[in-house]
Amino acid sequence: QVQLQESGGGLVQAGGSLRLSCAASGSILSATGMAWFRQAPGKQREGVATILTGGMSLYEDSVKGRFTISRDNVKNMVYLHMNSLKPEDTALYYCNNAGPSWGMSFYSWGPGTQVTVSS
Image (cartoon, rainbow, N blue to C red):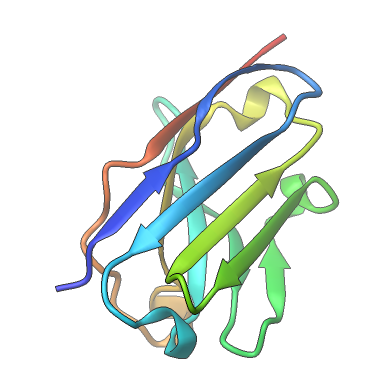
């Protein structure tokens, strides 16, 4: 059973930066596409950034140029570097594998980490 633990969220002013971290149990990252998702109050969970096993990364349009996803396969960690944060980035952020779009079933979801951006 893969377990995921997100951290690094917090309260930041618009224009600020945060780095989110995701620790995954087991040696799964090197063979698995991973992704960050977010869910704002009253909205569905959405994909934000994906990093594939070859290192290629994909981003949702609203975060392109501001967010960067990276991974450390030795440490079993996935990161999301967020710059130029906007109030609309406020959400609970989760990591998981890249999901059904890439032929995978999601792992159990972790607790997420809250990001709040004040204007």
